[in-house]
Every structure is written in structure tokens, then in C-alpha cells.
Image (tube, rainbow, N blue to C red; front, side, top):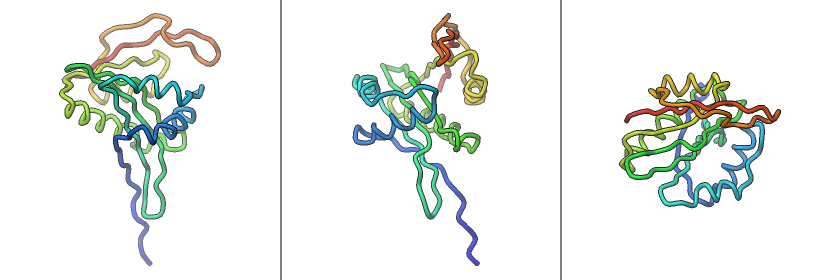
Length: 159
């Protein structure tokens, strides 16, 4: 009997044609959906790019995560990143972070910034183990689905 192939995670840059999938992944990853128009507006400026993660084996490939980023000069920013719940804790987010760093270096970026809610324990841990350090704080930056305001930590990694 043939042993089943191990699942693998692939991360690829995506173009405009796959942005509807990014909108769908965003809606599955967070409490509030993000319309396609919002992604189109966010990705319109020069220097923006998107990554999509797929979880695959020999039988199926399934989009399961994403990252939206931009580069201006030698600075980059992770605008948003998410993994749909059923694929969390399988290495998808850390794979996205590694691919993001590679893509950023390819674009001449030397440091990447991001904001994360102080209440997002999992994301803060992911960013810390990915080398990011806290460099600032934005008060009442996020409004949660329950209307509560939450501070954001500003974090940075030097590549």
C-alpha cells in the first residue's frame, strides 16, 4: 500500500486575477469581511504585492492564507496577513512570514513594519519568533467587532 504524501505549504505572489480569493480568505480569517474593492484600493499603489498560501498534497490544493504588503524605498510594511481557522497551527503563518521576508529583500527592502492588536496573542508570538520587535504603540487603533477600541503595537524587523 502506498503511503500518503505529506502535505506541503506553498507561497506564491498573486496578481489581480486572484484578488477575489484574497477577499474570501480575509473574510474567513477575521471577524469582519473585507470587500474586494477594499483590496483593490489597498493594492493599487506602486510597490504593493500579495502572497497566497496553499496547503496541498497529491490530491488537493487549498488556498488557506494570505499576506498583503508594500515597499517604499528600503522600508516595507505588512498591511495584513491571515490564515483561515482550519489551517492554523500547521506552519502556514510562519511560511508566509518567511516568504514575505524573501519577497521584501528581492524588492530592496531592509526593514519591515507592522501593526498588531495588543490583544492578539497568537500574532504577537508569531511576529516575535519571526524576529520582529516592538518599536511603538498606537492608542485605540483597532475597533473590534464588539466596537471595543484596542491599542496596536508597532513592530519592526531588520532583514
